[in-house]
Image (tube, helix red, strand yellow):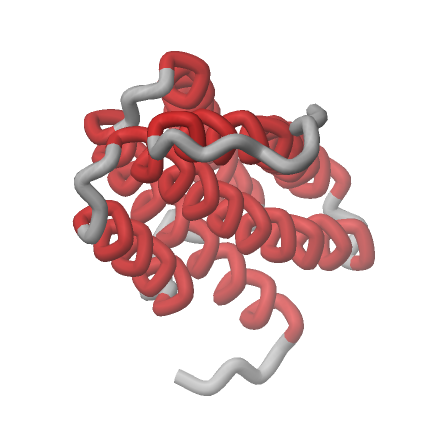
Length: 174
């Protein structure tokens, strides 16, 4: 079906992130089983809970727009999940695996941030304050999660390097 109106565009993009959130939720659950770092596990658990709430927020958004909540296959999300699964399977090192998981989750967060920023802007321009507020909640959580993942990356890399017996040339900062 051709997208011919801004409302159809908005609903399509909403369906895209709806599908992406469901795919990412399953991916996070898989990554939680593979993660060994306790801080990383904690972040994943927290974000699983947030993702479940974000899906509920999206259900409310669809309802407010008078539409049935329905995903539109998100090829980007499918690709990000597949890439993460593949790279995690390619290592036998738990420390390297944790770094790969952190990086994969950060990529996901940035996809979600871009999606939600577009949706928040669209809802604002259409004068849909109630919709905008729900989408802004999701966006804020995604931005906070991305920041936490990015802050954890140097520590996870340092841990992997130490597991290999390597020393770092510079101190790792948060």
